[in-house]
Image 1 (cartoon, rainbow, N blue to C red):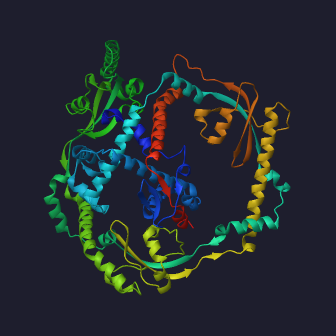
Image 2 (tube, helix red, strand yellow):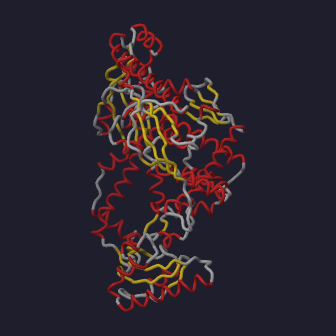
Image 3 (cartoon, rainbow, N blue to C red):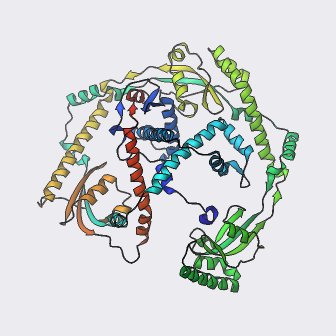
Length: 632
C-alpha cells in the first residue's frame, strides 16, 4: 500500500527494535547477584521488586506468542531455560529503563497522551476516535482508564529516551564502508563434519559413571507432584451467552445511536508517482516535472492503459505492481494535496500533475462510495452483541461477589455454586505445579490448588480472577506426591546420554587436533565436502558460532582453516578463496540495504552501552531459589 502518502510520518525503526532489545551481549548472569528472599520475588532492580506473578504472566504472554511459531512441536520448548531467561532479561531491562525514566522526571503531556490514544485504530469508528469504543475496550480488559493511561504514559516515556539515543547516534562514512565490506566479503568454504555417532564404538560407560551421574542429578529424575481437579468458571462471556436481547431493544439502541452507523464518503484511486523530494534542487524538480508531463501525455492519449503505464513508470513500489491501485480510503488517510485532488474529481476522471511532499502524482479516480447510513438489518447483529456484552458486564459485577462467597462458604463442594449460577463443572487432566492450559496457566490459581488445605482437605479454592472478568474456583480430586525414579528405571537413559556426551567430546577432540595440524601446514586425511560460497550478510542458515569461525580465520595465506562445535558434532572448514567486496560507482541492492541498516546497528550498540551503564546505578539481584522452585 502507498504508506508514505497515507502516513506522512517518520517511522522510527530504531525505537521498534530497541523496545524489545535483549541483553544479548552481556546476559543477566554477568551482573546479577544471586540472593535469597521472598519466594514471591524473582528479582530486584534497584530495590524495585519483580514478583513471581509478574514473571509468570510475562512468561505466559511470551509462550502465547511463540506457540504458533512452534507449530505443535515439543511444547516443553516453551518452558525451556532459554525462554525463561529471555523473559526475565526483558523484565529486568524494562525495570532498569523505568527507574531511569522516573529519576529523570520525564513525562508525557495530556495532549500527547490524547493524540497517541486517538491514533489507535481499534479505538476509532469511521476513521475517528470514538469515546464509546475507548470505554468498551478498556472495560473489556478489566482496567480503569487511569490504569490504562498510566501504562501508555510509562511506555511512551521509555520510548522518548530510546528515541533520543537512537536519533543522537552518529555514523562515520569510512566506518560504514568497512562494515558493509565485512558483511559482503565472500569466502569459498569446504566442510568436514566429525559426528559423535562415528565415535560411539570407542566409548564405554561404566556402572560407576551412571550411578555418579544419577546421584549428582537427583532432581532430573524426580517425578513432580501432580493432581487432578474439578473447577467452575464464571465469566462475563459466559453470562453474555446466557443473555437474550429483544428486537425492541435493538431498534431503540439503533435509533438513539444513529450517528454511529454513518459511513463517510470513500474514494478509490490509482496513481503514477514520479518521486521528488520536498527539498529537491531546481534541476531535479525540472527533470521530474518534464518526466511527469511526458507520462501524463501518454495517459491522456490512452486512458484505458493507466494500469499498464503505472507498472511501467510509477516509482511507488507499494502500488506500481498493482497498476497504481491504492484501494478504498476516506478523508484523512492521504496527505492533503493528494486528498484534495481525489475528492474534487469524478469517477473515471484523470488529474493534472499533483505535487506532494513525496513527488508528482498523476491520479485516476476509479470508484466513489457516497456517505450513507447503514440500515438496521445490516447492523442488527453488531447491536445485539454489544447489548449482550453490556448486560453481561453489569450482571457479572452483580454476581461476582456472590460467586466468591458461595465457593468459600460451602467449601466442601462446587455443586452449590454450579447450581446457583447455572455453570457446568469441568475436570482437568493430571497437572504439575508449573500449570496447564487455560485458567490453569494462572500462577495464583495453581498455588491455591497445591496448598496444604486444598490437597489434604479437598476444599474449594477461593474464587480467583485468572483473566479480566473471569473468576475460577477449583477443587482437588486426586493427588500424587513427588516421587524419585529408581536408578534402574532411568539407567538406559543415563547410559545413552553419557555415551553421546563422551562421543561428542571425542569428536571435538579429534576435529580440534586435525585443525591444529592443518593450521601448521601438515597433511591430514580429511574428506572435504563440495566447496560453496559464504557471505556474512546472507549466512542466515548458519549459526553465529560457525559464521564467526569462518570469518575470523586468518586468510592471509590460503587455504586457511577454522573449526567450531555444532549441534551435529564438530565441524572443520577449509577456506580456499576470499573475495573482498569492492563497491562500484553504484552499490548493489544488498549493499544499499546494509547501508540503510548501519545507523540502526550503531544505535543498537549505543543503546546496549547505555543500558550497561545503568548497572552501576541500579543493582540487579536475582532470587534464584524462587525462580528454580517454580520450574520443577
